[in-house]
Structure formats: C-alpha cells, structure tokens
Image (cartoon, rainbow, N blue to C red):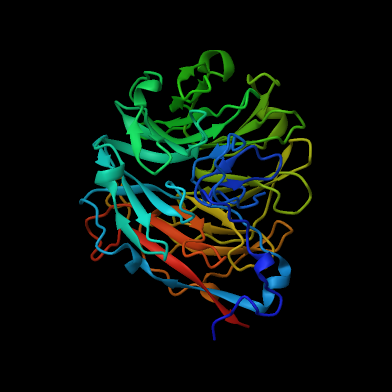
Length: 476
C-alpha cells in the first residue's frame, strides 16, 4: 500500500525544503560547503536546500557530491521507505566502451524546479570523453540533451563542483580533470545551456585531479577552488602531487595562489572537505589522502597551516572519499571516511575544538570491496543522517577498471553509529562497478532517490551506465 501525504506522522509541512532551482545542499552551519546534487546532504547540516540561485550559495562541495543530506522529521516514521531499480527512466542512454562515470550530479540547471543529471565521463587513461547532460521532463524521466546544451569537448573528467562561480546568481560547474587539461569551467546562461570558459582557469602542469571543492576560503563572498591531486602511477604515500588553491576574482576568473596559501606537500589526495571546526570565522580543511589525512587550519585570511600532528591521529588507510557532518547532534563536525582495498570505513570524532579521534564504526568490509564515494542523506526518513556507499569491486587484472560489487546503505542512529540496512530498503544489489553517487528528489514526491554512476569493465555483460533507485513510501 502506497503512503499518501496524509499518512499519520507525515504532512506536506514535513517535506524537505525545495526551492525553485537546484539540489544543492547546505551543510552544518560550520561545514562551509554546499554540495551539488541535492546536493551533499551537508555533502551537508545539511539542510538539503534544493535550488539556491543567489550569491548566498557560497560553499559548494563537489558532488563526491557526494550526495545530499536532508534530515526528515522523526514524526514521519509511520511510513516505510523502500527503493526500486528504475534505471529505465534514462531510456536508451549509453556510453562508449572504456568510459567511466566518475561523477554524477543532480542539479536543476534550467530553473524549472526539476533535478537534471550531469554525467562526468572519463577513462582509466588520459584519453578524454564527452560528458553528458540529461534533462528531467518533470516526471522523473530523462532525455539526453548533451549536444544542445554542452560544448563538444572531450576531457578525462573527474568530480564536479557546482555554484555561483561568476557572480551572476546562476549555477555553473567546475569539473576536475586529468592529463593536459586540469579541469573544465562550464558557465550556465541561466537556462541550462553551458559555454566553455576553461580559459579562465590557471595553466597547470599535467596531473591527475581527482576532485574539486568550491568554498569561500578568504571571506570575500566568492567561491574559490581547492583542487585535489594524486599520482596513481606511483601510489606511494609520499610521491603524490601538490594540491592547488585557485582564488576567484568574483567574476569566475581564477588565479593560482597555492604557493602563498597552502603547505607545500606531495600527497595522494582524493578529496578536500571544508568546515569551521577549530572555532575560526573562516573554514578549515581536512585533506582526504591515501595514507595520512591532514588538517589545515585557516589563519582567518585564507592561508593555511598544517596542524595534523596536534589534531589528527596517524593514518595509513587508502581513503577515497569523506564527509564532514554533525552526525551526533553535538553541534560539532565529525569526519566519516570511505576506503578502498578492503579497508573498512573510518569515523573520526571531533572534540569540539578541531581535534579528531578514531572511533570504531562496527561495519565489516566486504571481500574485495573498493568504496569510491559516499553520500549523506536521511534515506529511511527517521530524522537521522544515513550513508550510501558505492562499491566498485575488485580491480580487473591489475588495471584501473573494476569488476563490480554490491553498494551498501548504512542507517545512522543520530549518535554516530551506523548499521547495514541495505536489505531492509533496497532490492538485491547488482555487482555494478559503481564509483559515484548522488541523492535527490527526482520526481518531486518529497523523498530522496539514489543515482549511481558506474565505471568501466569490458568483462561485465549488460552493464548499465547509470543505476537509479527510486524511493517509494509504504505503511509500516
């Protein structure tokens, strides 16, 4: 039996805030980051703000996006949320062989109140691919309008960050990249048509940029860019690449000020998360690395000092993604990190002054599990933030492609503890090589849905490029 809005404990007033523009999500007041997709539920405290078009949207984290975190009232618990595979909503959408969907974003690019899908495409080499834009018809079905709305440019795209980059109030995209192009800047005309403005980015050496974060690091109300770089060709912890900090002039033109604002260090960085966790006015940074994670403290002027030794334990795990969030309702930002190579998810508790301690999560790792991305959101609608974790599965013959494995859903209890509840809410998970995830209300029913982007492996038969799980309400 399907649950109506009149279901006891659930009323229209309980629906998550849905403003007319995008699925950006605003984090904890201290998280200094609003992610794309509906955005990073803090990726966000994540008030799940859909569609903020003003310059007030200053903190946007890439939608490791990430997902969005919208917390529903606990009073809505009389309805049970289950998910069904409805990937048919993408129609005949396909991608070329050897293409990996490195990121997916749920964002209303044309301002019609419906979440569209941006698909960031790359490969396991420096070879480029055309990314895609799939438009929502208003009923949660998508049509590929890439040729009409995106410039015909192929790069090896990574993660994507969304925000008002050029001061026009429109949501534009900064895409991380690998190879000769350090990224791509796509400026939105306000109607969902994008032009290439990559010439506004600094010229940088060839590298592998795994991620990008948009955040106002110096307090001038413009979004600056933190670019996460790694060196997968020499994956040892101390043979990585220098991360970059690009300062925005307010009009979407960036200058590389890495040398004067960031510590000089060759890290294997897969993400940077920003938040006010040391009590300063401006955001500090947690650098998610393969090996030692790092805490960079803002001096109040957008310059950072490495205070890892005083604030973070020694770490060696091969981390791929992470999220800052007030998981315990204590008013402080804790850190949750996903790992690859059979290493379990790790949780770091903040003492309220920016000192982190590792605490057990109690979630066993699956065999050959590679957790490439996590997204936060109240998927079971019990008022607590949950975690959806992708699983690419084992590598294929030592290459950078993956054989696939089941992704998982972990329900949070509001006290920093999580339990695997995949079987309670989802159908049996296929062995997709999933490497990206976004959460958002695709069909406007007030409940978040789950979008997965898959990697590439020629050994997989019948692989779908995108996997979509739509939420359904039933009475308990």
